[in-house]
Amino acid sequence: MSRSDVMAEPGFCGHCGRGLDEVDHDVCRARLRLEPPRYCAQCRRRMVVQVIPRGWSATCVEHGTVSGG
Image (cartoon, rainbow, N blue to C red; front, side):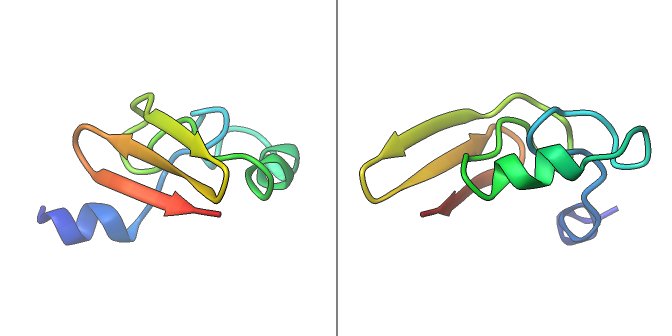
């Protein structure tokens, strides 16, 4: 499986880290509109998160950095 295949299909919640098919994630989706993700959606690893006044970045050691704000 290539890296692009893994990136195309997230399987985990960025807020709680649980599988997308395990529980209802309505509360998690609402929180992710206001907060950066804490878990990588591809591999479930805890990410390093940096919040700055104009946004945020979250880094997974395996899948790189996502940012928003």
